[in-house]
Image (cartoon, rainbow, N blue to C red):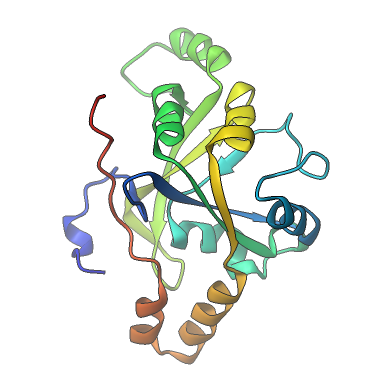
Length: 196
């Protein structure tokens, strides 16, 4: 990574993105992953539309959550999902923090949370050894209409990156951190779309 870790602000969205899409990650069972890859979108069933689904722009946070795809059968397949930037920004604009902060009262937060289809959570970013870092990575929980939009409109491409995850994990286990770093998707600070 080009940016020194100490220079990264506490909360900053970092991602792989281009002019039209941003990449997020999810981990699923073989059944859900195979169905999604075959259809280019999540299909219900086996995907559960009624549950909150969490998308993560941070590759290493996804590796931490899924244990490089070795944690359990329900998270053995790591998927990279390219979604529209408009959809991503809709999620941010319609989100509520998953925990109350000092800016609003607990009652105001409870009301906002009950009305919001999106949860925003900031968790410690991870390094190659999956150790927590000082700065945070964003997770976005989608529910209600946000899940419908994600599945039916935002998704542009789904790629199985489980082999990449396993390859990087093997390099980390072997102590070849330079080669492992070269394989990690290069995330950069996210710049929102210009107002249209």
